[in-house]
Amino acid sequence: MDILVDTSVWSLALRRDTPSESKAVEALSKALDGDADVYVTGIVLQELLQGFLGTDARQSINDRFSSLPSLVPDTSDHIEAADLRNRCRRKGIQIGTMDALIAQLSIRYKLTLLTTDNNFKNISRVIKLKLS
Image (tube, rainbow, N blue to C red; front, top):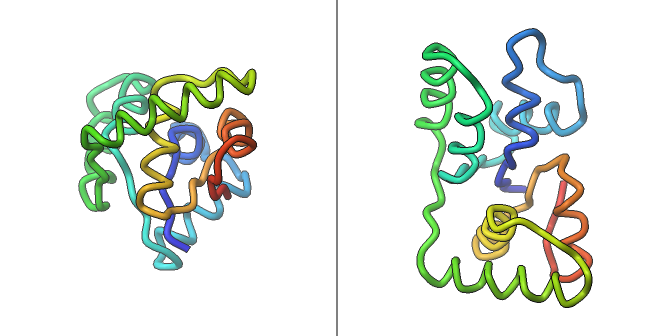
C-alpha cells in the first residue's frame, strides 16, 4: 500500500518531546522502514513548517522530506480539488482548500491517505478516498 501522509500524522511523528504512539505514527514508521512507498507534497511541508519553530526543526523537516518522492499538483489538480470542495459543500460538508487538494492528489495517484484528521473521513463520504 503506497501512502500520502497528511500533516496530522507528520506532526505527531515529529514532536520534539516524544513522538505519539498512535496507530497512524506506527503505520508511518513501518512504511518508512520499507513497508510501502511514502509520498509527500509541498502543501503538507508548508503546513508542517508553519507549525514548528526554529532553524533546527526546519532543517530536520526539510531533510526528511528531501529523501521522499514529492507530488506536485498541476492545474487539473486544482480544478478537481475545487470541484471536490464544491461537491462536499453541496452535501453539507465543509472542507478547507488544502484538504481538498491533498485528497485530490491522493485520488489522482491512487494512494492511501494516512491521516488522523476527521475532515478526510467526511470527504470520503462524498467521494472514493482510500484512508488509513
